[in-house]
Length: 235
Image 1: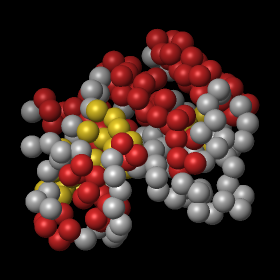
Image 2: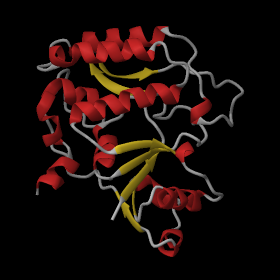
Image 3: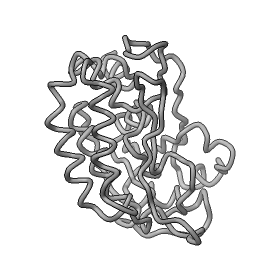
């Protein structure tokens, strides 16, 4: 059985995103989809001494209502140094910040040279997978043919990747047509994000929905023990 998940790329995603990646054999980045404003594609949350804030990559979207994520360009390069400086200010006292400082400083330097949002997201996602010890194959939807129909397209990607098991995010229950997967002999499952253990955090009360960077800087090599997919593999 080959397990496949399909999601749009996000900027420095939360731990649940990486749990989905770690739960499957192949993770397909679905960036031929329409770019959505005020979403997770170009922004995420971190904890700071002044509370939780959004780190947002400025992108070209004025008048481009139908552009795809893959087509979305970054407005300027300054965002990368601004984000990194904010992260340094917020996490310099975290137990494992010094251990990962050079890696992420280098990633932000590389990201500042990239023109497209999708490439920036892939840079961070792939390297964070390495940090967490996730070996799942990462691919793009453009590696395969796309068919018409919202659910049909997902099922088609799974089949093209040689999969027979699809793991979806829970929000997709609102639109996925189960019968399409049944007709294709694909098992359909939904990720359950309930039951995450908490861990010590800086800057006030606990929030489990911030970027994965928070967990990495606080728990370092022990980060996977606070993620559900690793615990399931150990059982």
